[in-house]
Length: 137
Length: 137
Image (cartoon, rainbow over all chains, first blue to last red; front, side, top):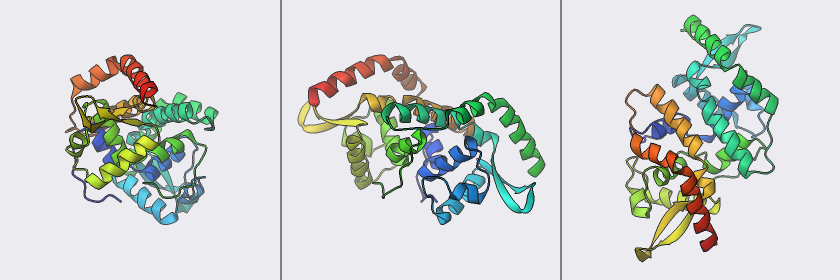
């Protein structure tokens, strides 16, 4: 996904090395707030992500420890994608984008209830993610 | 800078349409915290930005109202780049990236004093930006 980039010691630069890509953060958003889980779920987000880009970004997000790829307990042949604790910790980044995006785009809209629920459940979600990480590592 | 993208109404998607690019946010970072102002200042950030990319992103950041291009009062032939209020309002996005980046990169480092000073002066910086915007519009 990324060309060879000179890495800086700056924590912003380091963050952007990992998620400094429009699609990566939209995938994280959809896993975090919209409870999308499968490849098909993610392929149908409203921004029309191409499936090759989706595959590439999912691989990269898994490699960098933002998401886990797990067998779907409902259908073992299928995989689901779940945020790790590291991925869930991107919540403040996304929330600050929601704040900025709504301030400067009068036509912005988002599922307020879902977002609030996710924020409220953050601790619980992190606990669950830790448990899953232990099981599947 | 951006190919034609289907825009969503999601405020995160809208934010990423504008600054969902590694270089754009690194430029905003350098203007915000490191007090870089001129093209030359920005061309020498530690991440080795190519000058054609820098030009492209500066143009795009100006077009989307994140920065203003002003004549340098010290040397009228030179231009400086200054964040608008809209640009300064990206501060929480960058601060949450600093928090995440330092948490997950033990070797991350940044000019803590400069960042704290900028955060402390946010209101003052916004007032100055508003004044400049009125003068140069």
